[in-house]
Amino acid sequence: MTPAARVAAAIDILDRIADGEAAERALTRWARGARFAGSGDRAAIRDHVFDVLRRWRSCAEWGGGDTGRALMLGLLRGQGAEPDALFTGQGHAPAPLSPDERAAGAEPQGAAALDLPEWLWPHWQQSLGDQATAVADSLRHRAPVMLRVNSLRATPEAARATLADEGITCEQAGIAPTALRVTEGARRVAQSAAYREGMIELQDGASQASIHEIPAASYCNILDYCAGGGGKALALAARFDAAVTAHDALPARMKDLPTRAARAGAVLRMADAAGVAASAPYDLVFADAPCSGSGAWRRAPEGKWALTQARLQELTATQDDILHRAARLVAPGGVLAYATCSVLTCENEDRVTAFSRAMPDWRLLHQRRWLPGPEGDGFFIAILELSKK
Ligand SMILES: C[S@@+](CC[C@H](N)C(=O)[O-])C[C@H]1O[C@@H](n2cnc3c(N)ncnc32)[C@H](O)[C@@H]1O
Image (cartoon, rainbow, N blue to C red; front, side):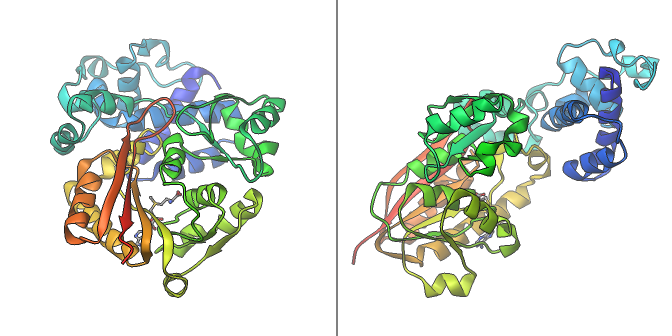
């Protein structure tokens, strides 16, 4: 496909997304009907679509509307590219720009230029202070591809060498001792021998770093209370020589975990609420709570536009509930790690403060926030300890 035909395909997909279809579904449906597209075409089209999703608001302003065509036009204008070079009408290219399209659109200002919902901007500034603009802008760009070296199977050096044999190059990242940043061949990682043999997992750098924030201790019984796909449970099993239990309110989310654990050589137990209670108390409970995802909007940009003030309030109530439920499962002297992939104070420090006020037997050992950067997403962790008596 020509570059212009790829733009035309992205326009079709963006129209479906603008009509309410989820991005992944719209991409898959398009790909099913486009057997002529090669893997390079699909990757380029996906990149166009996700570039727009990260910048939906500014693209709509630059392009003068939120049809697929206006959005793609807005993306090009915002990037300082020349739309006429692609909107030629030749072959499978999009039709040339009409006079109305030429006249429409203006440079976005304020929160629109930063691609944040208007209502969120005051919360954003309150949470991020003088970094508010830089962090919002960083979420308008692609995220790095980060790998976690599974210490149960490989050293970072061995993993890098195995990946290099297949043309995938990585550099050691400073964010966590297990973290590698892929510099070439990212799209081949999931098919690589290193991945199949469990030497590596795809996992964001800050998520990995959060596991290394947990105080070193000889834990025996660990619970990942909100395990989801199990990325943190696997990282916990690799770092600590302990029995690790994975739980999620929606057990279907853990469906691939047995396969992932087998590949990683990790021994994990999956438990429902009754199973979790039967093995309590735990000397470490990790609660990676559902959140706005604001630290990870580079990877999952639809979340940015779906978030509302009411949803944020619901999330903070759920976070409080999870903190209290998880705390009841911790043994005296044990540790509760509360985590989110959000950079908003109302989901992080404020929840820990509310919990600490209500629970005098708990002591905050420390908390840390990562901002989105070249090695990781935005992330937060608080480490709380229950008194021994
Ligand atoms: C941020 S995700 C977890 C991601 C996961 N730890 C990982 O590393 O892939 C939050 C998870 O919490 C689960 N969840 C929501 N409410 C919950 C609750 N009340 N108790 C336990 N898990 C809950 C959700 O189903 C979701 O899978």
